[in-house]
Image 1 (tube, one colour):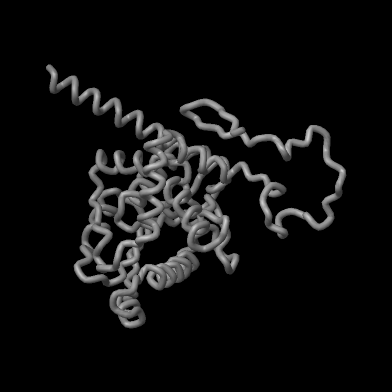
Image 2: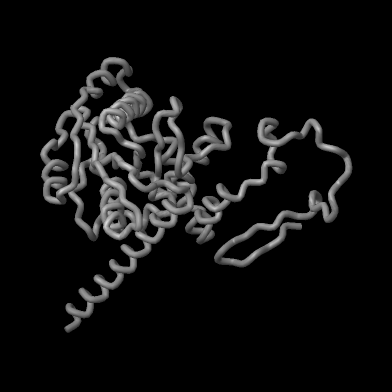
Length: 291
């Protein structure tokens, strides 16, 4: 009996998790108009927990959506030594989803161009992006779906601030630089913790991410640890930071391209709050004022 009770509890918890992820993905799609009637959406499948979860949730939502759209799973086999090329085709055949495996030896190019000991991530990413865009054009794709989640977006914000001097993150939806493609991130509202739990429960055939032997991105690792420490000390901080990305006040920053400071007059508006102490919202602790 105790074992049966435990199984039932585990099943209930998983159903709650699945519904939450579906709700968050559905909300992100609706908020940013990510998928429209007749869209052909290419899901970039790397073999990691995020892209597996993305495809899984989109397949479920597709069966319930009030609009018609199609899904195409795409994997790029970069010819890294030891890559288990049979895993994804077997999984996708079992699902019955349309897919395309693209074989491009970007591994050799990266190894030739990047000196030993240097990180290969930047060049590898550029090559991969170019191939994805090319395949999207060949396959008549209207949207390219990537598996970045909320934690990725917040980490990128701090990476750009600390190491690039830019207030910039990952938008849930964007046009590519050439304007030919629309990239969407349906997992934008989902936490990495939930995705990890979901992936473990679903037992996806995960392909290791260390096949190329490249060094771990130390800067991102540092940012991830900093944010984890903050979240541990102040639960809800990650949510507050993410919410701030959609609650921007350009006049209270310093970018001349976003706000016309040059013609700003000297007459202050009524109830000017410029010298008021800032309010800091802490979801778990209430609202406090400094000062």
